[in-house]
Length: 365
Image (cartoon, rainbow, N blue to C red; front, side, top):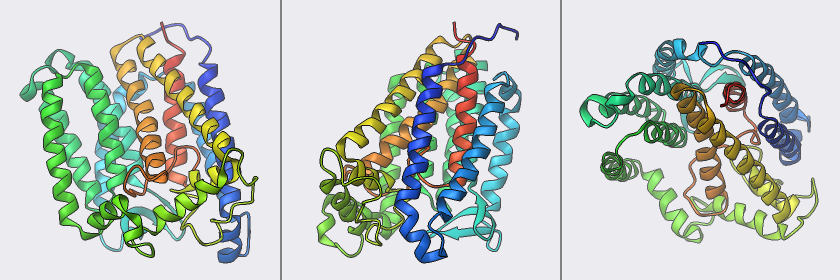
């Protein structure tokens, strides 16, 4: 397929650049105290984040200049490789346990998280599959059931780690792709009921998940246990007020809020930059989602449209869950804030995916 390339979406690129810059600044601010205490180097985390950002930007430039139809041919192969990695990570002695989950492959402090790769591989595969079989999507057995079975298998492997947060993001983005492809609402509503029943089962099956639910409903019931993170997060956001305490002036990063550079980095940002800083970051994410949705609508073919909606869906679902957790509107799930939180796999993979989205925008109608 040959079409004339246009200039990339400058709004999208600007939003990515500003969010990434805010993220690097906040990773340093949130982690400096912890890094100095643990490693004797205040710049430990931010140096690694800059390395991952550089790798991600290089990958983004590559994918932004690679015609997105290439990924159509690679969809199935990428999915099979990711299934292999998800199986590999479950093998004792091969998969690395961090934060209570066997989610990593790697050596020492360097590693990759296969569930991050699966998010992108899943939306690429679904975009190809559903664009090829779009006329069947209205039929539950022939059109909807096969992709749902593949999604369920991937979700099951991720849950064996266990990593509910990554699984929820993958499923949320995948369901957006399926809905955009034309799936019947009654089928999706029926699936939602089954999903809720399954979620209840998962919560009952693992006591720590039930603790997170009760801590979400009333974190002060167990202020030094299950409710600790939620309470400390609110203690960070509250004093921030309108303009914040000032960049670098957070109190909660002094070993009050666990891992402030990852899941709860928005808490530190709100404490230091206040409502204005938090609102500015949310507006940047809204601009990114808006331009991503526009790219999906204006894509020249169904594959490009579904791929764009899947990529921007990963961002939107992850932002919604992370900020919802931080402000106490959702139970703690262990989801990072895209482009902002510290993390190698998530940052490089997301920048790679956003490069694909930028390339789709270059062919918009």
